[in-house]
Length: 220
Length: 60
Image (tube, rainbow over all chains, first blue to last red; front, side, top):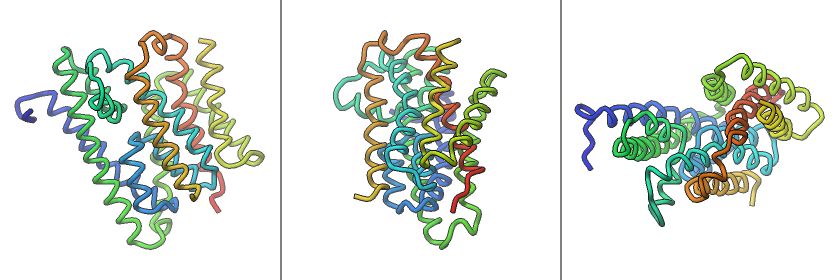
């Protein structure tokens, strides 16, 4: 397969998404080290977990003193959307065995989004793989640079790098808020989490808000 | 094993299971309106809660 961004619109979209999102890996790398993860642990999250929001949740919750089980549960619930992307992609990709394992690993927001934008199955496949593999390469490369950089500069909070995590969450949630109802739900989640923070162990207030998603999602 | 290692490995395993299950289960199991509605809201509430807690909670 030859990649040609000059002549192929799919390639152009895939590569620009891959690079832009991949750069953001540096922020994750720095956030991981700031939350007391080693460079190796930070890089393993990008290599193995490979889903931005879940990765930030793990380092955010562990960095704030939460229990491993809270971090795992929150990351898992955040990653459930990837299962629905898989449902959407499987009939287009039609892969089995080791290929399905590889396709599953790169089933994320970006690869599914670029694929969905295309108007035939050949381009949908190409968009999925190019974006997924591209994000994987750039995201991991920049995670390593970000983690290494943050580990070299001593106390990262002096540089304000500890603000990277809430900033990342803002950037991840903002584009998802599409109407007034969702803004209200978002506000309720913030309110509930803050209300529970003084009385529940770290991490628990966050996972509890999933009840709001179930209640509001069921009702509609 | 330290809590951080447990979180790294545990969350990586469940993340992959999420992805793999999607590719493997019959479409009709997950392709339901209620599942989709709840799924749209799950990242909204969890990420909003994380914004709130990370911004306002004391990080000492």
